[in-house]
Length: 509
Image (cartoon, rainbow, N blue to C red; front, side, top):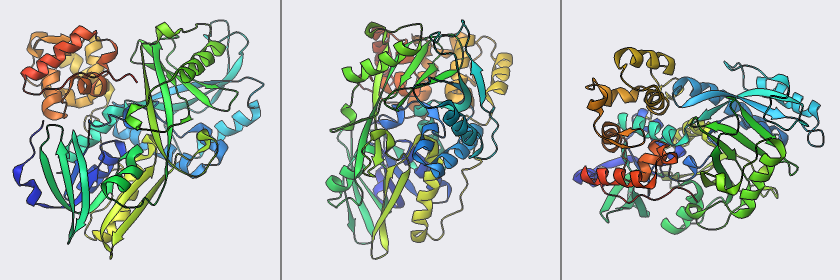
């Protein structure tokens, strides 16, 4: 376990943030960059729940237009442009093909929606929508003959969380994972926050404000840890995904309509795979235990069968995961229609010691949500600095991937092409930290599993809070998809040798 400074409990923080998903780390980074003293604690690993179990998209949400969520779509599309600039190594433009089937949405309605989608967010660097006809070379069934193609982006969601955690640390925040909040209460002129590490170490933090960014646990955190009544109800909506061998060679994604009005994405993933999802079903129980059930699996397999020439069987599913979205309860009867917008609630005591709770939200708008959180807290911290994240490169994003590829090809020509591409896509310029003194492949140290060298592992442990092999293979990288169990154990053994222990736990649910 990463050591926490012994005298930290005596320092009065401005803000204590509970929750290390995308909203928590985004808020911590923004507040720290405005000059506040911030600590963030996450009970497991950063992005170990909803923030790494997403559809891996930075998008406006085309289907939200059907529910008249124009403000959310406008904000999300504008943020898509901001994040494309700030994290070009993690966020990639992609074309999405929307096949048309006559018995579903009429073609004029789709065309009108895409026309609005291209324009509602303001000017964009991405190409506009175009009409498409499919020929015999299309991977789709011959009965599907036309459709549309539009632009959105994919994202490495877990690495986006890590990048924001690093940014928060660079701005002076204390960032701790595998540390849960056992209790928090107002005591005199501060919040007293009791924490416990995975190793059983008790920690105390004192702060003038508390931020509840626990995602699916937002309501239960208030009720169980604070012993208060939650101002909002959270509806848990499970979205399941599966990863299969790549369905087609083309680089674009598909967005498939279904009779129940839901849509399913088929996205090229990690070069050799296709990511298929998602579902929208009500969920009861512990969000960390959510898993894809047989009904969801068959639902996704069936929609692939009805659209593509290539069929997929149960046995071909390489990996699957289920994310639980914490949506603010708007009493909608249809899970797909529940708003993806966010709500921020502040409760204080005599105008002091605020509790800010985050309900809802989506990964695309995390930066705007973080700005909104800062505005909610500004009355309690009048000396808080101005907003600053709109044009701030995230760590690793300061060199464009194309330029970094050229640089590394010249200065480190010995790096294999596939390895160089993975490093650039995952770390951007951060990979230069462990390449600084490397002049040959041997300088990277022993290879521990497919495409993972000791120097990268050491970097992840010392600089990115990696504690377990799962942290490394499924969140800091996606090497778990191609790493046999025996090699996973080698990674675990290497981490133990380096002084950090932790059992590997498969991410599939």
